[in-house]
Image (cartoon, rainbow, N blue to C red; front, side, top):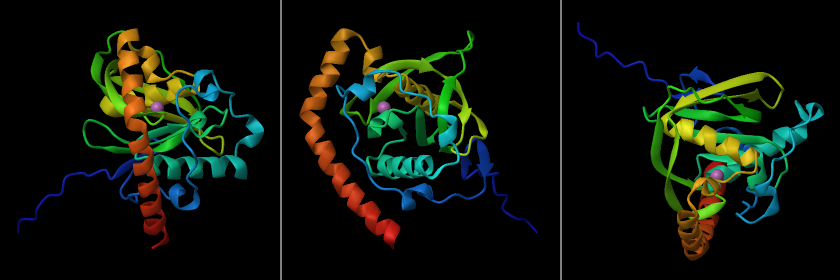
Length: 222
Ligand code: NI
């Protein structure tokens, strides 16, 4: 008797651990609220944010913030979101991002620190965008592999590694917590082009986010 072999499918890697099944929207989203996403130019985006203090770990306030950030990220159709992107001066980010092999990575990292880049690692130039620079994208070189270390909302250590698009996300989000946007890594000319484009596109993006937030409300209620 022949049985069709099912490939070893990993539904998601959650907090760095493979799980067989994971819902389309992380459970945090159902508990969270949609917050306003900050836009480049707002002060909190352009400086290193405060480390999440130890006394917040395991607390309700931090838990709520992570929930809200997931909901906000989904409403804005992003793959990652940092604390200062919801106006909070704390170093953390959430993500729900595929890598180049189609593996979905979901989680959050508090006080993230990016490992130094391996000298042998390749720099890949790909298109990148940011919810705080609504609309445009630009090509940018990033390391092909990245590892971020930090803790989870309860203070347990986490080590998150990724490649390709997910490695790009880990670098982009850690940058945010240090006050750096991807446009700061572009040439002056390219940066100017992107910001001009943002001014043309942002109203449409904000509208789209409102629609998506309302859809989410219905999906999560039903
Ligand atoms: Ni961003």
